[in-house]
Length: 389
Image (tube, rainbow, N blue to C red; front, side, top):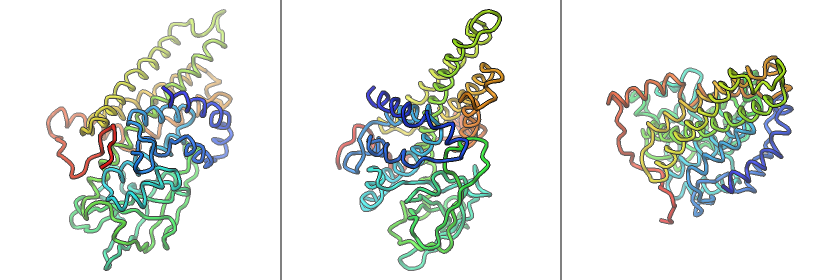
């Protein structure tokens, strides 16, 4: 496919040669956004009428595979900008909001981010403490969010806050907050185990005043909006995990051919072959789960269950593949002379964010047992191919 070939060449030329240095320095190379904009990737699955490239959702998955093959940091950037933010605006935003926020994001003129997690609210979304108080034609937001990707680079933040704490998760609403609003600030987090080349941190909302026109959906609809956003984010994370498995396979196969023990290439040893085989099986099974979820998106069908399964399994397979890749490299796998130690460090975060493996395990069991039943949403993600409405 043309997109895969184009992005593979881009990653091989402009990301992989620099990742060792960027990872060591904890440097996020923002110019990658400019190049992705030039390639039409910032709005890859956003309809052309809203400034995007109009490609299908599985093409987004392919883009995430190839970017994560370079490094998780740059897949994460697209996951947040496109999956969590832009696709949510496409689904839930009013026409005026799409014109004001979505079009410049899809064109790559503005960067979008997502603000749900808080210091004391991860999987327990209802526990968020950020508030949005209605004052005439405005809302005033107070609170803090953490583990926010692109915290220092994004222009538009999709923020979730309580408009009525007494209603718990039914009292959460969604808002777009622009970086240049008075009272907004951000701070990067340092000392991460992995994804050191990515920008992750905290944002602070100190009396941030925004017009009521920045509220996405109805008051109290924020929890549903957040969950549908996570359907899209988890889809991109699962696709990225396939890219990490690809990277592990490539590095391991190359090493198997150059390293010899006991008079033969280590790829000739059956236990090494077993690890290679596990990677290949994990890649193929993960892709099938991801593309199944993507096809459901293409046809306009709910895919919460399928996306959850894809995210859970693909991220676990990627973590196992990275662990095996280090093992295949032996002592050299423990050194950044080879990229596999970075793959292992990077592979851990996706097992945690956007729903831990434990949360997804429970979700799948509840679907099978009939305890979880997805109800129709007031607004749905448009099916592909997109048509002007």
